Each structure stands twice: as C-alpha cells, then as structure tokens.
Image 1 (cartoon, rainbow, N blue to C red):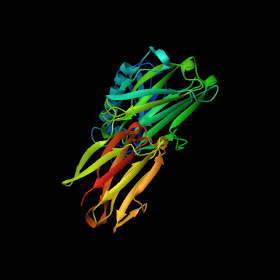
Image 2 (cartoon, helix red, strand yellow):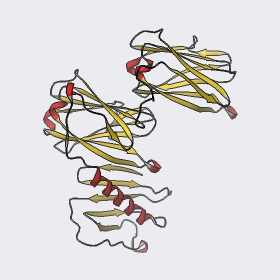
Image 3 (spheres, helix red, strand yellow):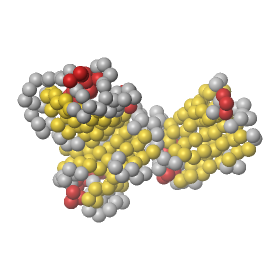
Image 4 (cartoon, rainbow, N blue to C red):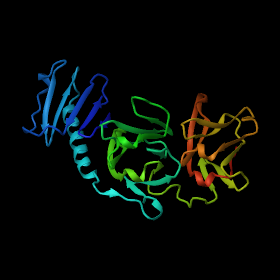
Length: 346
C-alpha cells in the first residue's frame, strides 16, 4: 500500500495483500462533509461502479474491478481516518528560524533525529535540499511550490531518486526561488507498518534562509547517529555464527578518503559490502583463496559515502546462496582519513 499526499488530497493505491483487488481511494478535503458515513454493501458494487463515503471533512470515493476481501472497506476507511487525524496533529505552523551562526537545530521525526546542515556553496536564485538518510527504511522529503508542483527526493536501501514520475538517481531537489512563497513547508515521510509510506510531519522555513545554499537533512534512524562521538576511533566486534569479526580503524590514511582492508580465513565466498551515496554497491570479496580487488583493499572518497555508512558482512550459505549475515553503521566522519581493517576469522 502506498500513499501520496497533495496539499488538499490524499490518495491510496491499495492491493490489500490480495491477488485480485485494485482500489483507488481519494480523500478530498476541499469538499465539506454533508452526510454521515454511508457505506454501500459489497454486493451492490459491480465492476466499474464507484462508492462514495462522507467522513469528517473528507469525501472518500473509491472504485474497484473485483471483489474486496472481507473487511476491505473498513480497513480503507480506518487507514484514511488515522492518517487524517495524524496529519491534523503533525502540521507545524511556526516558522523554524536558524540560530547563531545561521544553523538550524536538530529536529525529531517519528523517533528519528534529523541534523540540518547548510553549505554556502549553491546556485543563485535557487534552493537545493539534500537528503542523507540511514539504510534501509524508505524516507522522503517533499516540497509543494506556490504553483502546486511537488518536488520530492526519497531513499530506500541506500538508493536515492527524485520525483516518482522522473526517477533520476539524485539525492537532492532544486527549486527556483521565484516558485516559492516567502515561507514554505517541507514534508517528512517514512515507511511505517507493512511498508505503508506515511506522511509524518512538516516544518515551515523561510525561503531567505535557503536561497543560494545547499541544505542537507541528515536523517538518522533513532535519536543517535552511531552512538559515538563523530571522530571516535572504531574498535568493534561483530558476532557471526560464533566467530568474532573485528572492525578496527587506524589513522594511517589521507584526509578526504577512506581505505577498507578485508582479511578472512574462510575458504568459501565471503565479502564485505557498502553502498555509496548514489546507491552503487561496492564489495571486497574472497573466493577460492583469491581476493577481489586482488590486494583486498578498496579506497574511495569520503564524500561519496552516505552520512551514515552501513558495512555489511556477506557469505555463501546452503547451495552457495550469498547471504547478508550482519551489519554495522558508522558516521562518515569516523571513516574519513582512516584505514578500516575488517578481520573475519576462519
């Protein structure tokens, strides 16, 4: 089930975990409630017919071309009602102002912490909003300009893309200053139960604080990012099938890059994996005694990594199936200028 919300309407395209039904539910807040809820019986709805329901300030209309599972209509109404109530309480009318030095305070969204960083480099008469999010849950930032045009950037499993109708692999949206009012709302969306993409809340900002700048929203799962100070050395152990895999950092490196070194005594296919900011998977693997790259080392620019980089540990299991066994996330500041050595014992 997925949800896309415009300023005055929400749409739900629901399959209801059922192979046949396909519904489109529209809640239009521009139409006042005129009647009490009135649900047509399931047998009265034939193919290509529609059903209209009035609920609170919304008129809900959906059509279908096949029989709904039992309780389907009630489920749709419940979803719409809960999201309506949530939206009413999540709206923020106060304008968020930068503090001393021009920086914004961190905000909390559904139990997550979002750090807001402003960079002086940008484009004249344009604002650029960048999303830097933890893996793997779907997250989205969305702005609707004064003409009703929506701009969005989303992330899932480390892969970024802009508007659903134009799925370019970019982690930012750019909006011309002339297309925004003096204040604008930035919406925060997140995947919730059963993967339902849900509007969480919005923040109102002044256009003048964004014009000519790149503003990055670092969306971290939970209220801490990595649980350590930004530049703390890395000295961690991961338990995988009774083996203690160690992750150690040293300050032998070049500022602006990070070097990964992978060592293992396992004979079968084994790998470490991480994603770059554009969603590209990078590996160091070992199979039949040979590493790839051959020197079991991979050096990349730190700027190509997401704000929180997830290091994954993979190995071949039954029938040679490549399986993700564990993972650890690190803030990119803790990787910069260092050599990260991963030792996976036999």
